[in-house]
Amino acid sequence: MTERETTKTAVAESPRVRTRTETQAWGLGALGWAVPGLGHLLLKKYDRAGGFFVSIAAMASLGLAMGGKLYGPPFDHSQGSFVTLLHLLGFVGDLGAGALFFVARFLGMGQEYMNRALGDYGTVFFLCAGLLNLLTALDAYDIAVGKKE
Amino acid sequence: MLPLLALLELSHLQAMTLFAFFTSLVFAFLGKQGRREQARYFLWCFLLFMLVGIGLGWLMYPFPR
Image (cartoon, rainbow over all chains, first blue to last red; front, side, top):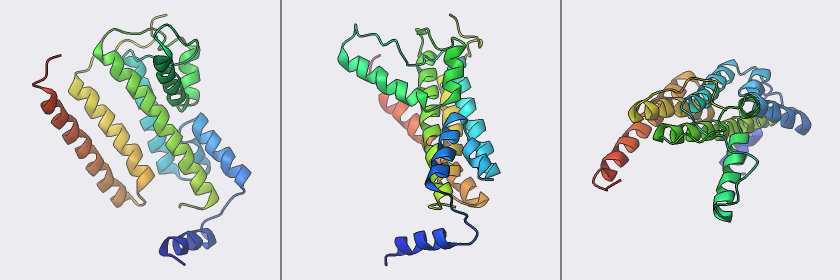
């Protein structure tokens, strides 16, 4: 047995780590996606939950405040299929922010392209908030199934 | 529709610092266990973000816009 397998087994069998069913773990991951840090909060990882929520919410808010654009339908096909594909990927990244994305869209934020450098930075801020939130959701899943403490 | 939030005015360096700060914080919580390890990793990531950002800025300086 390799060292990595031994560590995995030790974590999974540790009495301190309460493993959950696959469905519960997916649920916690999904909750972590919907609201940054919620998955960790329900797993009683309070410091991580707070850190994730503050960081991701701050990055998304800063992005919007800088005049960043949110990707999403309707997609403009006039600039060719490659640009459409890039916008589609941007949409997937923005969707990673979960409720923050839907609330921002609902409030009509990020719908207008601001022709200034800081607006582009804002777009990247929100996109990165989404991608980081996806990572935190996967982390919540890993903790729930006992792969990680 | 205009954004509901007032448009923020930041310099490029301020924007980069904020980005480096929050991203490093998430990386530290994701990547390390224990407060001490997390703090060290946070500082390491933050410094690297800043150094690489400023370094790339200097490298691009001679090129025209």
